[in-house]
Length: 389
View 1 (cartoon, rainbow, N blue to C red):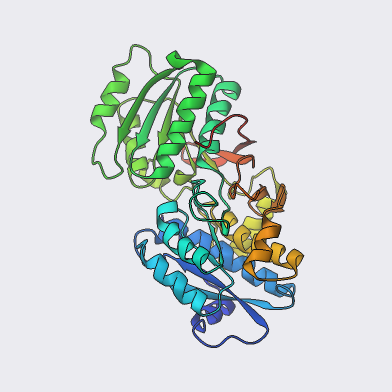
View 2: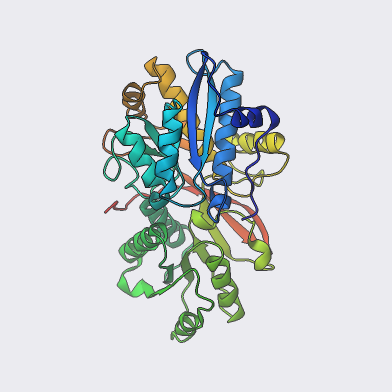
């Protein structure tokens, strides 16, 4: 992913002085994120979104009359360093922290935050990032991967009229496993067992999926759609191999392949659909999404290339809004308000939390398509039936 973490001059000064004593009229917000290493590109837009929220909230008076001061720590894409980072920024006074957008990467820092009575936010799509897997102070601004898989199945079967599917799972991370698992379960509910023509696996680092492609080509009848659960670089490589083998069926995937940063590796890609948090191509049906990405481009001097900035912005937005309502930045009081969010209108979309579930499940998500290598908005959909188990 080509995204880089871009910090405007005013915020760069904030980051550069993170180690200095804070002024009395500031409240600290920690970012324990991968500023370097292989995971850095994945969460770069999350960081950019959060920093934009800090700037805009400060411009309107901050939180409870205090400006938000960012305190950052580079976990160097090493999960265990997240625990060290959480301790460091909490030691500097952070009242809330953001950790990486993956349960395995974000959990070490979130556990430390929980133990120290500090709220943590992530873009992890695994519902374990919350009450069940971390504790009552951990919140995800993503949409549960199980809901993403189900909504893709419902949209494909009911709105596109596709009746047979083949699942191709990159069996490397928890997100892709739960995404494809949920899709397969919901697809069989809708199309019957006979509607799922195959369920195959590969690993992201595999140089070839020739065997999997041969099995699809060997079917008596080709599937109407291929559900691919992967991420770059393995995902684009799989698409190239499917197309090279003459498999031109629609391919669908989850938000782990959001963006067009990799599209140049699959020239002229068509019949490809991905679910994300909002179209950043200027054509989203929600004017709030279009406005957000216009502000993002104005701030950073380049168009966003993934939708994750919406999640990063919403982490700071949710915390600030809850703190204002609570009249306090203390975690216990902020959490009480967060747990009452019912379709709260955040940048990422309507968000609901309860005391038992700290991730969205019913929020509409956006489907975008690629035609002749150009991406565009298709529709917004919400899952009706799925299980978080």
